[in-house]
Length: 180
Image 1 (cartoon, rainbow, N blue to C red):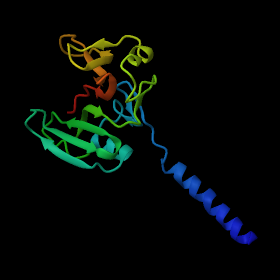
Image 2 (cartoon, rainbow, N blue to C red; image 1 turned 180 degrees about the vertical axis):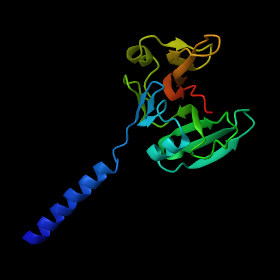
Image 3 (cartoon, one colour; image 1 turned 60 degrees about the horizontal axis):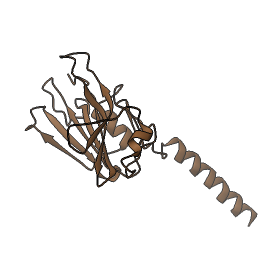
Image 4 (cartoon, rainbow, N blue to C red; image 1 turned 90 degrees about the vertical axis):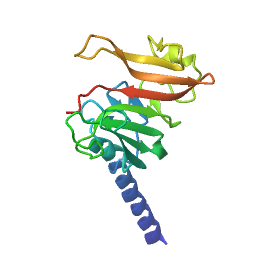
């Protein structure tokens, strides 16, 4: 009996070590336009990097109608949709050629680095984000604005929150990486 108990305890310890080293603990934190749940958007914004972080996607489909040579990649179980593109003419649905453009995040576990969560009341946008700006008259709020290093200096929303029925229903992340 004592040997059996020792064997069970050893197996549990090995299993716990394997789970923590395999990355079983998923991050659900969105850090502006730099990190989405451990995926380094600005450092490795490739489709390969996203697959490495989130695992195989639920679906991938080419989107040539957008004019971006784009690929919409969905991780349904994570509530995560990422649009990848390539300006160099390569197939953006190929992991090495797809570059991050934007993400739509709807999974209930996600939150911003400052603490705003999917499902929080709209008023909490002001609690967790210093200078939110309503985008037009729509349901979206800009939580983080950026000005790209090229172009006419017009800013864009790098991190946004969508409000539906008075609560946060989605986050958006946009990063203009180049993709060539």
